[in-house]
Image 1 (cartoon, rainbow, N blue to C red):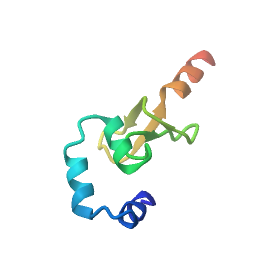
Image 2: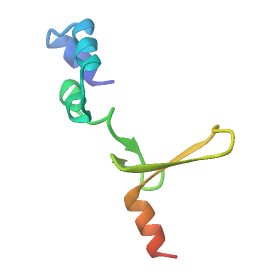
Image 3: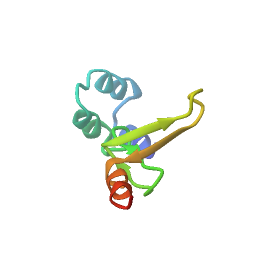
Image 4: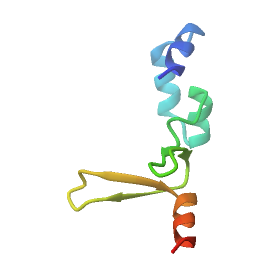
Length: 80
């Protein structure tokens, strides 16, 4: 959470940040509030990049989740 100390150093209180996030209606607004896309993107476990478009695969018990971006899924389908 590197963005959090920067926001506090800029004079924004934790309460202000919380309230802004509470009323954020879109992922883009969340990105603007925290200054990056780390909360609105998922990590692809295949290519190890962040993406907004992913699929999550899980086992029957939902104990293990494997997240794969659409780009990696398309690449795997081409290679079938």
